[in-house]
Image 1 (cartoon, helix red, strand yellow):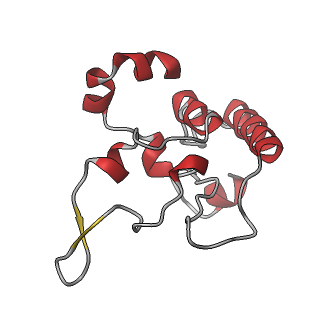
Image 2 (cartoon, rainbow, N blue to C red; image 1 turned 180 degrees about the vertical axis):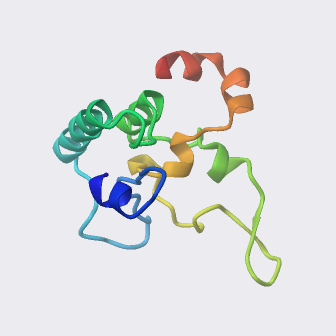
Image 3 (cartoon, helix red, strand yellow; image 1 turned 120 degrees about the vertical axis):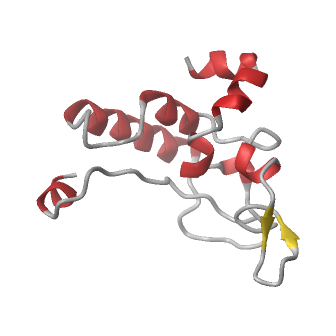
Length: 123
């Protein structure tokens, strides 16, 4: 956050890594690692409440990694490649069972209204 402030950025956001189902990447987040990352995100949010732009609800989104079938961006938004072929957001191989995606953490407010049970989990 300090580097961002020193260089005139308005704030900082982050992903915590989302892998694909057809690749093995060294940054796959394990359960114990996710817990440490969440604790660090909360710590940074406390230190920089106006500069670390993840809300507490967004951080809470990261606590549960399995977002299969509940990601507005991946499941409901139409995406097209450069040839106008329809594709899933973030590619067809996104591993939503280990989500760490910023877009997912910013779920569409309408989706929350349509799914009050999910919304209450985030509150």
